[in-house]
Image (cartoon, rainbow, N blue to C red; front, side, top):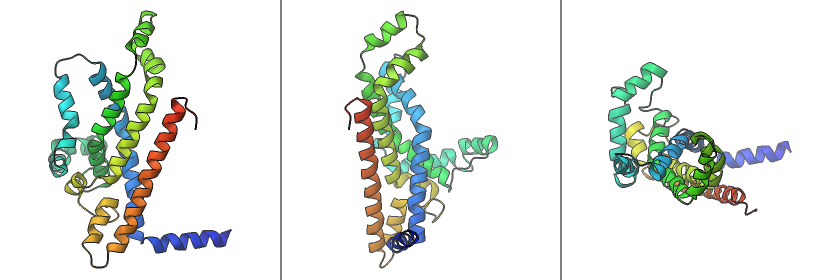
Length: 241
């Protein structure tokens, strides 16, 4: 058994170097936190867009979807202006929470969260719009509060859409490049995710084989995330395996 573990470790070391594996683990870390932190906001914003009737709803919809249509470099530059060490939001987070975004992995997570947010919101919103409002209204007439209606009626009905939105956000975070490199640069072991590592390897003579292996790892992770999403969605919809 020990020999099998040793051979597996040697194979992993031969397949990718230490810096490349560091980029893989950092990508997973960034994508995980980007998805975890943005998901509650995604549900709230999707509820506002699907159910809300307020002034500025159209503007909110535009702002949410802006990262999809703007060049990622522009998004990264705006993040640098707002969340950099000299930016107003960056200074506020640093003084209040000791949290620094610029040129840190936390900044990569922030950039990934913002770039994946529109996809997450759209998936959850589609789920909300397919829910029969009469069910929610019936629960409300029986005296249930809005929070109780959401937790007992709405959320169970849209849970599969929430899972899909989370997976889409995670996949987008894994592949985010333009906003990340603009906001936090490409620092090995600090901010270098898989896309940034591949870009650097393609600029180095003889780096193509490693770049290809990183691409294979990236595709495998994406396929695994989508497979898990499909499995969970089926189970949540009661479709079994």
